[in-house]
Length: 154
Image (tube, rainbow, N blue to C red):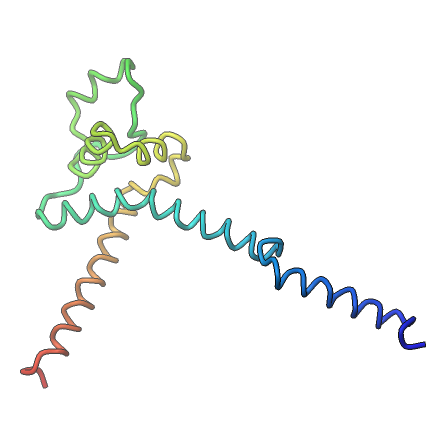
């Protein structure tokens, strides 16, 4: 009678499913979703890396970030009538450095800026300030760790 009960047959079925997932973890939906999430995280890191490196470069060199015109679209397609304007207008050191990276062959950065909404490029002055703040926090943490490790600090 127990073998024929609904809860027993359901438990046996779930036990078989658990065994399949344990032996083949790639068939579990959670693992598939987690792999997609990990891929997305890696892709986002690759997109942000050149932007963060540019902020760090300008900060290390003590170079000002902004110019008179540092808003709007950054990537201009070749052969456009705006090419002459790009040669005349200086958009500030940060944006010019980003353009230099693109022109020097940073394909990942170029594709990212061309294919992303202008509100999600992470090159605005607000985002520059955010990245500068994060860098400042990292620098402060590093200094505090060095001071605490020092034998002369009490």
